[in-house]
Length: 445
Ligand SMILES: Cc1cc2nc3c(=O)[nH]c(=O)nc-3n(C[C@H](O)[C@H](O)[C@H](O)COP(=O)(O)O)c2cc1C
Image 1 (tube, helix red, strand yellow):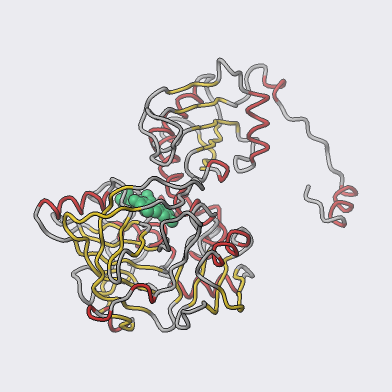
Image 2 (cartoon, rainbow, N blue to C red):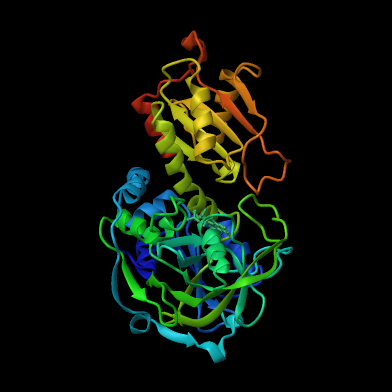
C-alpha cells in the first residue's frame, strides 16, 4: 500500500508535481489553474486563501503514467494489474484505530464542513463540492464493503447532499431505509492508488472492493477502525465519518459532470457528518470535474471490463475510452480481425460490457487508438457509411448523454476491407541521416 503523501513524493521526484506557492482562492482559481496544467503534471497548492491549515492537490492520478508510477509498475502492465486485483482478491488487515493514525479535526458539537477548503469549479455549479471523496460503506445485510466516488456539496454545517447513481451504494442506502435505519459510512479523501482505482471499478455486489484494492497490490491493504462508526477504511488525508439519513433527500445540482456539461438537478440522499479526522497539515485531493483526472479514473476501470468481455470473443489488442469521447461515451478498440463481420460482434460486446458507451469504433492494430486523427483517418478511409455503420436504436445508455431517449448506440467498423492493400497507410522510410536531422530540430518521428 502506497500512501497518498508517498505518491506525491514519487510524482515530485519524476518532475510530475508543480508547486504553486502564491495564495490561491478556492473559488474558480484552483480549477482555472488545474484545467491548464493537469495534462503536464499534478498541481499542489501550498497556500489556500482563508484556509491556512490545508493544502490542495489535483491531477495526482490524471494519466496512466502517473498511476503506474504510483503503483511502481510499468505503464503497459496497468490494466493487467487491475484485472489481477479483480481476480486475485485478498482480505485486508485492520492495523489499529483511526485515532492512532489521524488527528481529530472536528467532533459532533464543533462540526463545520465549511472549514474545509472545498473548491468551486464552474460558475453555474450549485456550490463548492468535494470531488475526490470515496464513500466506504457496508451492505446492511451481508457486511460486504463497497467503495465509490460521489460528488458531495455542503447543505448545512454538518450535512452534504450526495449524488448516488443507482449502483451498489444506492442499493445499500435502500436496504437500510427499508429497515428504517441510517447507513453508516466514511468519506475518505486523498488515498493510496489501489484504493483510488478499486473505488472506480464496478464489480458484483457480493465482492468486497477493499479486497480488490488489496488484490491490486498483491498484499493486504491496511485498514483503520472507524472512530465513531462501525466501518473500517484505509488511511486518507481527510476522513469524514457519518451516516446517510434514512428517507432524507435534498436537491442536488446542477454540477459539471464528466461530459463537460451541467448535469440535471435531482433529489438525492443526505450524508450527516459525525466526526472529521485528518493527517497533520492535511492535503485535500480535488479532482477537476470533466478534467483529465476525472476521465482517467472513471474510464480506465471500465476499459478493464470492456477488455475482459471483448477478449472472450475476439483477438483484442487494445481498448480505450478516449478523451475526445469524455473518457466515458466513446470507445475505440483495436483487433486482429479473423472474420469480416467480427468487428460488429466486438462492438456489441463492448456496449454490453460498458452500457454508457454511445459510440464504438473498431480498428486494426496499425492504428494508435488514443490518437484522434489516426482513428478518424481509419473511419473515413476504411468504413463504408451504409455497410459498416450499425445503429442500435434502443439500449441502456449513460444518464450523462442528454441527446435523447431511448438512448441509442453507433458501432463503426473502421477495419481494413478486402483487398487489404487498398487500405494500407503509405509510409515514408526514415534513414539514420534524416533521424539525426529530425532529432536536432526536436521533431518526433
Ligand atoms: C472522479 C469520479 C467522480 C465520480 N462521481 C460520481 C458521483 O458523483 N456519483 C456516482 O454515483 N458515481 C460517481 N462516480 C462513479 C463511481 O464512483 C464508479 O462508477 C463506481 O464504480 C461505482 O461503484 P459501484 O459500482 O461499486 O457502486 C465517479 C467516479 C469518479 C472516478
